[in-house]
Amino acid sequence: MFTSSSKSSSHTIEVIHRPSSRPVPQPKEQVVTDFAKNSTVLKDGYKAPFGYNRNLQTILSSLTRDPRAFPSHPDRTYHLEFADGGNTRIEVSVGDDAPDDLPTYIGVHGMAGDVNAPYLHEILASLIRDRCARGVVFNLRGCGDSSATSPALHHGGSTSDLGAVITWVTMKWPKSKINVIGTSLGGVITAKTIGQWGDSCPVSAVALVSPVYDFTASSKAMETQFVSRTVFNPAVGAHYAKLVKKNKDGFDFEHWAHTRPTPFPPSPLLPPLPPLLPFPAFPDQELSREFLPFAQGARKDSIMSSSSGTAPPSLFSSVASASTPGSSLPPTPSANSTSFCLSSAPPSSPIHAHTAEIKAALAKSLRKITSGRRILPQTLTKFSKGFVVATAHYLSGDEFMVDTSAVNDLPNIRVPCLAINCADDPLMPGEHLPRSQAMESPFVVMAVPKKGGHLGTFTTKWWKKQHGNRRYHTALVEEWFKANETLEQLRPRPRILHAQQGFVYPEGHPQMAFRETTAVYLKLKYTRPIYPKSRSG
Image (cartoon, rainbow, N blue to C red; front, side, top):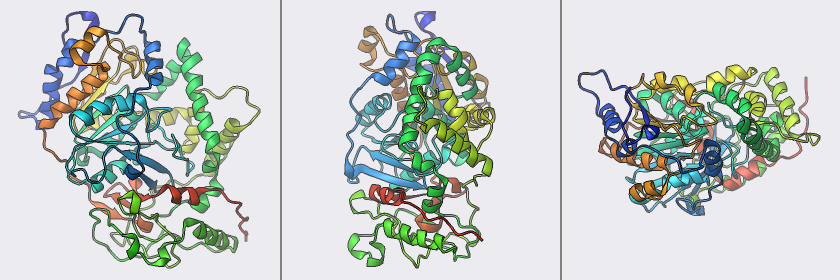
């Protein structure tokens, strides 16, 4: 561990990093160590503008409405459906006519954010502009205009969704170098995903900005600090209560049972298929008419099958969507569906079964949130310990917070990772930062300014003259990725395997299974009808 120097000790950045113990460090390890020692932005330190305390900086980080790094466009918008029926919306900065080998920066927003998060676009703007790169942003489950279509909400342990997006990028642009930027809750998801992926991770470099590593410490701070208890906690809780009310049908188990896909059936006996390479393209004129009906007709057949007491057949064909949104069709119904897996013994379903206790806990929490009798919404901490815990298949809030925190994932990170946390962050107190865990991996460097709040680090006029009109963490992230440009262009790509119903997943990670689809398909499939009661006996 060593600390950078600056003109004033009050502006010093605490730098936490332990160089590799190898006689000859790997190039990735050497880049991290060189950055920790020689970074100009780290050496200059950080001074907050006069009057900008931690709470003001945290509030301004969400209220600032800087222009997006790139405009949203239908031809550059994609939709993925996950193995449990959840979905996300992806927006890309450049079209398919851009070179495949452009570097790609994937942005992961934080709590109460979406693809338009201003703090995320500020970081992406300089990266994709100055480095002629490709920007990719996506909604965490249920955020923005991505409706909840499964009884699961995003949380710190939602690593499969980010893993699916990263895998989708490797398939769509196989020659592109991939970097990931995670902010706030998105930083936790990013750290856990990269740590769990280990040596086989296809990402080249990572930047974490204000990640809330320890949910137990964060929850305690939110409930004890005055401003956090009276402003942040109820405000974010109200946002999530509104989100759940808008998507309450998505958390209904009966509805989900009729709409969820089954990419991993219980006992498939299917012939082998070679590994999938890029997305296959199917021009509209080459599709037979059996693939043209929308999902509404398939859902009708499913209802009739369930009401007759027999198990419904597989509803969706194995046709994968084309990668160009304008010409792609959703996975459409086919009564004679023929899907294939890579081997005769595919992995068991990664979707956890909902026990009676979990269903009862989720139903109870859902009633509390959507009840019209509530005068005030739940705080974020109560919402997380009740509703989110149940959607994540937990009954204990304390166990959930420990398991979904990223503290123990830092030592497993095997790609260059910069983590930026301010010591006065009201949501992640500086005394609880996982300094010792960060030092267990020579690929991780943690920078801790003394001030800056949560996603704040607004700068003075003097600093802007030296480094440009941007926040401190934005300048540091840009310098970080510039330092990593000296590394090899590509990390190993995952081997892509087939599942049922057009789903694909990286080898060894069936929980990251996904298929590309369309907004129309998702809307038709998950619009709630009135289901007939299943016959018993």
